[in-house]
Picture 1 (spheres, rainbow, N blue to C red):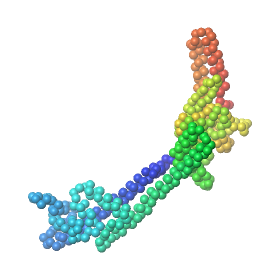
Picture 2 (cartoon, one colour):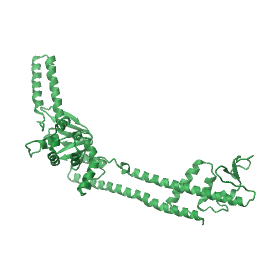
Picture 3 (cartoon, rainbow, N blue to C red):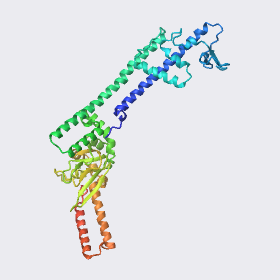
Picture 4 (cartoon, helix red, strand yellow):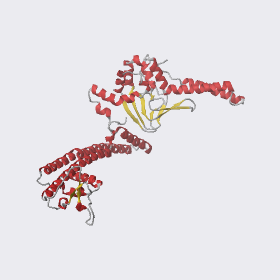
Length: 440
């Protein structure tokens, strides 16, 4: 029932985080290009300074390290740059306000001359983030064509990122807030109605709890309402994609072919029940067959004189199997069968249901499959009614065996007669609740 596909994009913080990561990556790329171009401009300055000195032999190949001697203390003794390096004494090339005009690369000079790896990584990212966020308003390029083209790319990239990423966050927030606003309006109307009708606090709390669970499970959307106006073939394919995996979890449907499963998918409806909610009461007409997807349901059946039989229905189980027997019974009776027990939610329940008319349509058109002996046995095996009856008869058989082999548990004659009488009452009571289905 809960959305699994695309669920990562279902919250505000995930959407914001993913867009921020994309913006951060773009800033890293822009800052890296800026740093590389800044190194090229520094190399160009060094060549110009070297060209003015006839004794200068400058080599900027990768095999040799460029050493700026002015970065070392003046009292340093010996060759501070080492043997395999190119000594560059020209300090003006690394001055921000020096004679060489760096344009948009002037703030990269401290980074180029720094020996810190962290500075070389973080400062270009900061420059890219700042430039893209301000659309290049702080850029003052020179007349160099490559610098001008790079500045134009920064401005266009900033505008595009703002439109696609930041704008996408705004649209996403608007969509989420619109859903929340819809929920708030519904809750306000519900509170006003409950107050006007003077409902007791216990019922109000149950209504609030159900609305919160429905919102958390379905996200405030009625999927069946959204797709009801679509073409029949498209709607069937969508419902098959959404419901097929859930339906296959029910053991009763394991051996059905694709044609029957498609018809079931097209007619099921999602259901949500809150904790301690009664799905159906004992004696009420069974109007739908409910298949549990998530959660547990407690089955309570009153036997006689205050004796109650209880059992649990877990994920993959179903209730309302009286309806299946009613659909397959011949001659057919129009009156809906009565529920043999009360079903209460032990915890929040997610399920899907088949209404009586839809179940009758499926069993009538595919009777050859539902009349199959294997499916009959499967339905009886997983039926909560038959399981309760079987448990009661096992208990009855054990009592008879214990009485026959070990004698009465109480030695007094009257107590023994009372025990036998109770045993006969148990037998009559237990056998009277034997389920009746289409296997008869």
